[in-house]
Image (cartoon, one colour):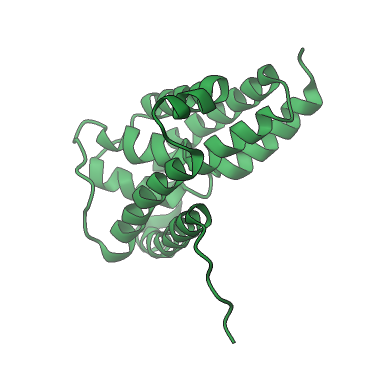
Length: 193
């Protein structure tokens, strides 16, 4: 049954977790290396991954003998290397010149990452699957338009602005990767004295 409150709540949670607007500098950096981003492909692949996890996530991971924490740790490594690329200016990922960055790392793990997949599985315990699917679709429409607008953001920010944002967001991405790794391995970090 369609419930607008559930759709709105799910939409807001997913919008915050996917954080496509916060990923703009990362997307622009990937675009500078690959030449072009296929917005349709990236959006459809991310949507397919997240919809699959919404519908059959836990059984799918169980089938492969993987738990959510292991999945999150794998995603943290991809984010770590992506952050290192941005900060150090070196290349870890081989990008196919024909939209190679559209799938990895944009569709996964940037959009359909461990955080958004875990969030979907958590929302499923609280809301009806149909309402979450509608909220996911609405988020993917926003993702598509943000990916399409990368040229616009490049023009506004300019080369210097992009460079500064690339380094700053690279460090943020490294911090997110480390937090994701630590929170899913159970490592306890002692507080500073």
